[in-house]
Image (cartoon, rainbow, N blue to C red; front, side):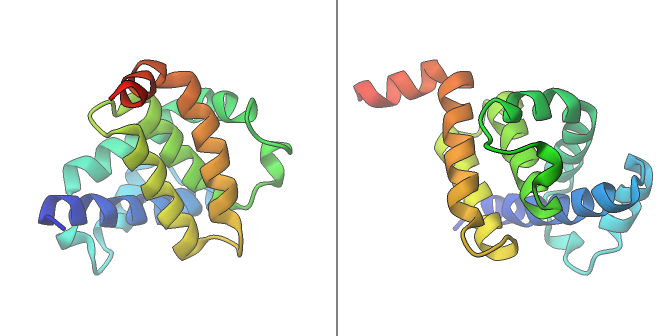
Length: 147
């Protein structure tokens, strides 16, 4: 695995921790960034990607929740803060990080769910993000199917 890729993986983990904190405390972006920067692993993270991801998810949270709500089987409030955070990260990457292939965005979210979520949370995350990808990445998915 390349160092850059590893840094992005760690960046997603740190973003998830910050989003968990945000869901529980309502802390603003500045406070979340300070906490993330104090994490022991932060020097190994891709700081630019992490900041973009966290800023983007917080700025787009309402729109991301609307997009996710069409593909989940329960009210958003019933999702665990971890699963919700993972879905927000995955949804943001699918809708705003077009340089990240949709399969990578989904796989990274599934890996976060395996590491931090409930027993079968990764299956749920995979299903929800797969449905969202079919909606927002139609061209990419169509091209992948033809190759």
